[in-house]
Length: 516
Ligand code: NAP
Image 1 (cartoon, rainbow, N blue to C red):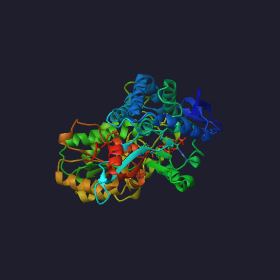
Image 2 (cartoon, rainbow, N blue to C red):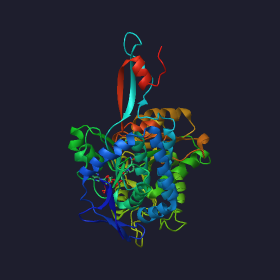
Image 3 (tube, rainbow, N blue to C red):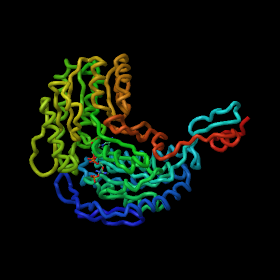
Image 4 (spheres, rainbow, N blue to C red):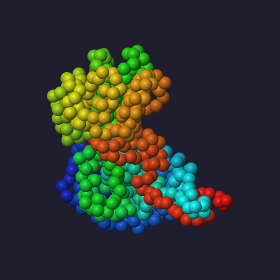
């Protein structure tokens, strides 16, 4: 039994207030607790502003990249220990835990590598310079510079390592100190990572602070150079976006929220084709990896109506082979959902879907024994127009098949009813179908993942977020954008147009030689 502490103002402190209990979701054993209140956020911000920020900015991009490399190495060094914590407090199988942890260290390493091709200092030219006056003598150059503020990162419970790692990578490389808030149900893993970061001494003091508990009151203290990056539900995201201080002071806010992602089986793949096989395999991984608790997991499976029976049979067979169990057992392929609250929400969500859909396999009935287990649950919509299919995110191992007429127009209409999603995947070798679909759904999605004969075995599936391409989505998905290489730094950098004599502007800020 451990009481989690926060690292703020240069020391570890225990919070106050009523403790929230942390459980092993496979056994319901109590592991520890978190006390939500009692932190001095004014002091935490001052610490970041006066120590962490200046120390980071004294380094420049390339040296900060070295820090990220060292952090990635530190996580990798402790990988086995961290995997075990992810199993105990997050219900993660070994594969799930690796997905989270390697995602964190991989993203840190990606940004470390990116830094090697960035300027040594803090000034990053944005594109080419341009003539602004009657002659080239009056010149303009856009530059990015670190904002002298603090990044507050509010993370969801489902990716305690990756969520923190990917946000930290971008902020720290940009030169902005971070305050990381962990999602409470799985906070043990984030806490251990925070301990490793602090004990390692890799980062300058004040560059990294960690909150176990609540950030209540912190957002009210932020100013115009600060930034908030939030990951979690749309409901919490809306509260944060509406925070009066953040609105009044134009504090930058990036929201990554929930999403009703789709997978579309095109009209063409035959049941024995690689494209069809990829579709089935990716849907099963998406539904069961991390017990379906992935913001990018598929929730709606669009299938040409004539193929619904055969797809239902194929998915049922595969999903029934995955029996949820304690992830510490090597042969278990899917663990429990993360908390009793999640279990309650997922069961209630399945019941709501089952009111408009037939349960093909799984369902909401309780499973025997302790633990927050839900079987992989596949439903088949009776009415594709039922609003709940397109509005309710059941954040567990659950998705619904929806029939469509095989046309791109019908698939576009259904996909876009999600109100803005993180990702849609499509499986087809019909170029005309794919082109129409992409053009129709891209504005409503942050990512479109295309599976075809040629991509078989080439890449991770649509549920994987890669640091080189953006993560986020419009509308309901939060309207935010993270990662995407250098794009991921933009939340933390100020873009300024410097205008003046080309000899000064071009050479000093645009990296030009002696202009002609
Ligand atoms: P959540 O309940 O919205 O919580 C997210 C985070 O916000 C947690 O750290 C939570 O702290 C904190 N929080 C809660 N109320 C707050 C408030 N009033 N002010 C500031 N912070 C507050 O979401 P969750 O249950 O952790 O995560 C599941 C959801 O996240 C799903 O809907 C999933 O789709 C979404 N998600 C989205 C992405 C993405 O990248 N788009 C990634 C992962 C998950 P406590 O835990 O202490 O309550």
